[in-house]
Length: 543
Image 1: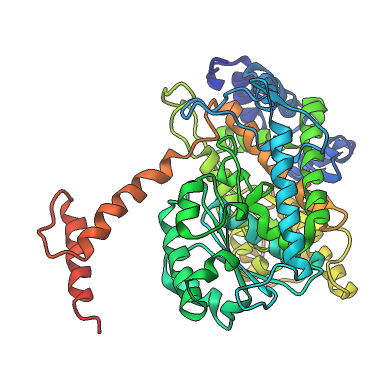
Image 2: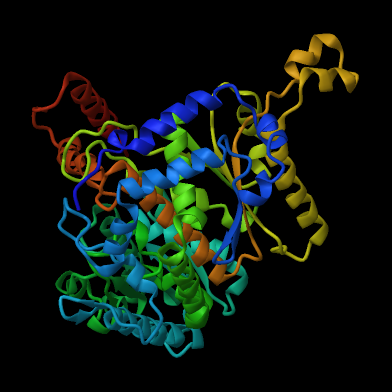
């Protein structure tokens, strides 16, 4: 479908007028002027309760945002994605991460082929392997059972599994620990291997092409560590691959039956529910992994069947468009009030910024709008004692998502009460602040009043789930996948390519050779040449 420049739509012009109308209006005034605001802006879908009322808009703005989504063809593009059409034009690919979580027995025919059947064939193979490892019937080269799994990948092959391992730690029901390696810095691998026994360690090498430089560098180091202790034949019992390159996997020494594939219609940042999640399944087992997939599917159904006016990922995505396009926001904070979601903001950084950090539309034309908010965050309450100062009293507009769970994640119930009190209080304080008059009435010395006044009007969205279960995690991740899709559809961009990661990697290959050479340095700017020379000098002094 053709790209619609959002700035040419009627809704965009009306939203510009609404932004001017609301300029200077405060959340205090919006709440005072609409007794039903909370009720009308509180929604629930796929097990996630969302309060949008503390955002800088009103019902009229929401109506225009929904109208904008319809004018740019959001529903048509959504349906095209789920149907398996090639909506990734720069790579001429389908976008079917949603097929990864179709229930068993489902069918999705694409060009006469049942994609769902392929997905469940891989899931079944993963499940069989994981049960072998978890039961102890899969043993290492010396006959010892596996006690540690080291996942080697990068990007989505690292962030998703690492995030899930922590988020679902309470569902690990076997004596198995997972560690994760991504950085090509050798220290990262050293940390992961510290204290491990090669005889009881299993490596999961995750690389679609099995050529990813960082991943394969670490994989070869891990192989050397293993074979030094156990011999060359140990590779087959201590390494498995998540890849599509059977020849390269076999050349590494991994048996064909120990390779788990996925497809080019699944981008790395959308792959944690594919074979990339093998380490997750090893930890929590096939049944809990299936529950996570069911959670993803719950949100897929909500996204595809719920009217836009009540559709959680659509409304979240449209909020980002509103803040970016009309109120000048440049960043989005995501603050999970759950220590087990400590890696969730990092996971979202890739999902959001790799997807929507684009400068041209789907047809290759220049964009007329800013795209791609910078996403960042830390768990509450950690952030309250660092960057929340900027959120409360800084000069920049920074919308945030606050994520909480009604049930505690530990047996320390009083601590959970305090955690949730902070979550609720922060949303209130950000929205409504404290006026100079209120500060004075509290007995604050006059000289301190300016410093202890809070302007409020700091927007937040509250997302509440019952408990951090595998199903809830799937729902939450899919919520963000689809709000990212919504933004991209409105902006007219291809959210599913990532050419921006390629140039630096390509240049690094050239520079890597120059760092260890004595040949004259050519083809670089003066600054780059100077850095290479400085590194050569330092390298010559290594012992």
